[in-house]
Length: 337
Ligand SMILES: [Cu+2]
Image (cartoon, rainbow, N blue to C red; front, side, top):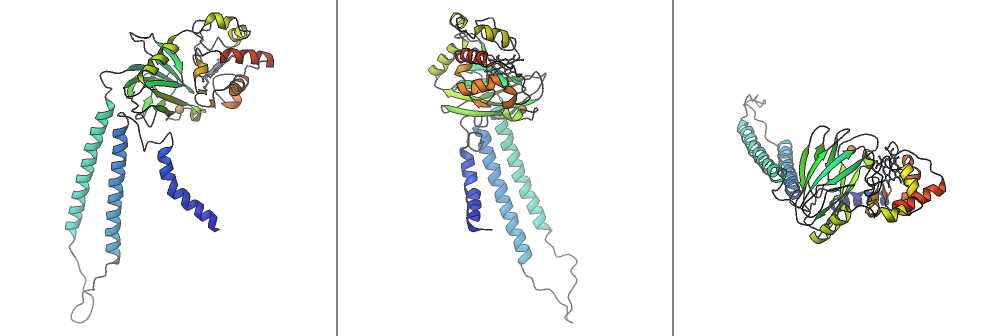
């Protein structure tokens, strides 16, 4: 093998694990009390397992290479040894393994109980519905803000727990934001509950973690953690209806109503569809179609023109809009902030 390639491989082997910790989907470094105990446990069990492997390896090598003089009888012939002893090592080994495994079990149970129970007071309650292949996100109403529905992007206040309840109308999905919490299966006919808490402001990545059909790989979600005041402001903005009057005056309003309203809701207008994501404030989201595309004008036009090219099999059909209508509808959607 040529030298540069060897160097490259060595580099990847050495750097990948370190770089891996820094990737947004890595669970090797987490950012909050719903996830940290799991990470600590993971590293702990990993270290224990490595240590045990090392000890066993060393003992094995010692047994292989240790030379013992073969016992001979008076005439110089090898003596057949029936029982050379050594069972005590087996007892000691089994005993030590049992202690280590028992300790690991207890540690696991303690970790589970630390992360499983939702804290008594939470800053918000969210109901997440896993659809093929996007996330509907319903914020429960509070005394400060009425409930509302959005999609694919969850906002949370920094340093406060948020309760997350998950359901599915179609197949099994799994809700996973590795850096903020454990995985939770999303099972039709079942309400499962977990929680998230971000200790630091930031944007965290989530994924569907249970294969759920063709576009499973394009079923991402984003969690945006911001200081409490910013979170309250976001809640108020998202809970507000769209400005129906301003929207109604846009040239694309009638086209949207005719082509899109059967599947999409824009609160405040006559669009009440529930097949696809609520679009009331879609222009404020970072991505389109569950992380498939960054949300900008070019991608919005591409998406509306040909969702089946960008996310084949998704539940938004190719609508075949003529170019001028496409432009008007895109301009309308862009105003949904
Ligand atoms: Cu999935």
